[in-house]
Amino acid sequence: MATTLPANTTKANFDAGTDDPKQARAEFATNADIQNTLKSALGDFAQLSNPAGSGLQVVAQGGGTPDDIRIHHAHERKTATYTAVAADRSKLLEFDSASALTLDLTAAATLIEGWFVNIHNSGAGPLTVDPNAAELIDDSGQIVLGQGQSATIFCDGTAFWTVGKSRSDLIRKTSDQTVNNSTTKVNDDHLFATLVANETIHFILFFAHVGNDTADMKFAFSVPSGAILIWSMANARVSISNILADGEVVTTSGSDSNVQGSTGNRAQVIHGTVRNSTTAGLLRLQWAQNTAAVVDTKILTDSYLMVWRA
Image (cartoon, rainbow, N blue to C red):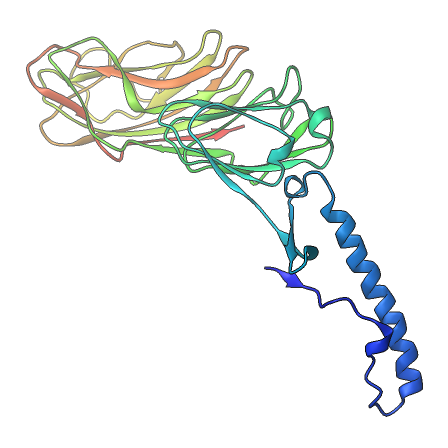
């Protein structure tokens, strides 16, 4: 919202038609001086090299005198990896890509204390925020925003901090995925989450599937090298080999477990934790038919992966 100041005031344009002209004239003269000083200061402000970069936009009116200050938050859409610079102060940077992107941050000393930027990830690909060199953000080397997540990043001159970032991600499968006549595990197109170095996450996976009891289904989780993985599930049907007993846990990346297939829809619920080491990467569901058969084995739309970041 803009607020417009009146034209310069002079002592000569005082309206004498008041009850107490002498007293009113003295008060008016003082107020006129204050108002004109304020307008002069606004004029000085307009000479700053980059007022918009500081989050304020100065608007000139009439003869060019800056009479108006507006709070200005520019919106820019990014579809590729980008480096945030000083001129991005106060902007909303929206990232929109089906692939993973990175927001690199210029050195904190260059951005200076008080710099901030708003970010939003509207794309399906994860957005990694990576400070310069060994600098930290929220005491970590990186942070990751999933689809639909937002945050405001603040700089204190030596490091970065976020406000408003959710500690949880909900990743929903937006379309069916099919394997037919194959026992070679595939990466799930949707059910995966990004892990930064030295991060711990807890997760729940719900996946609905359909196929038949000839092909059945096998699945596993892959994690980055050096990560510690632990997960378990309650069994729906136990009639094929390599199915977990109730309460049994898996601690090996890529280790196969099986579930029985059916021509009717079935669902599995899995709970787990990943404690990552120094290598960033993904927690990802991988799956295939347990026995090759000419039938569509599917993981269905609206299956989801819920992740909490410790």
